[in-house]
Length: 219
Image 1: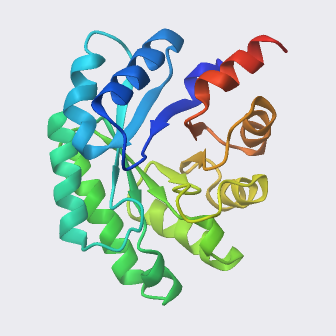
Image 2: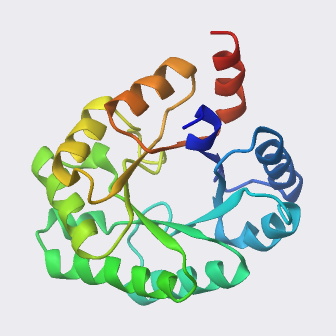
């Protein structure tokens, strides 16, 4: 797969303006990235900006903490899908996972998957690997698979730790071909992007996608 198609071109900053979202969409069109990854309030605007092209729209849900109620996540998912999101990146309830309340975590994932499936949208489960032990990463991957998700994702990029090749490799060892993997958080240059793909990432979340593509062109 061509490098550009690995990227969910990302802008999730709380102060992102309409103009910046429009620029993000223009860049995604120019480079034919897989998707733009944005907060749900911007999905309507992105849908207008990307009309008629192949770039998908990814909306984050329960972002960045994952600590809102399951009903809230399901409602946000439905609203984002109605507005035009074809992919949902939901944040797992990290505290419940670390508490060993696996039934809660599973139901949380299942409700988001159910809401997204009504619109044919796929779901990526953000584990926030920097906050988890090896055993918790493994369990999070297993619950994502059991809950019907399509991807597991390393990080939000908002909790201090980003993607690591070790985490991606562990996720790949755990889920094999059951789910795909998205590496996100701290991917700012071509070498890091390449290492993540080699480790097993099927998708990359990055705000530096354009710069990475320029670096790749000079290789």
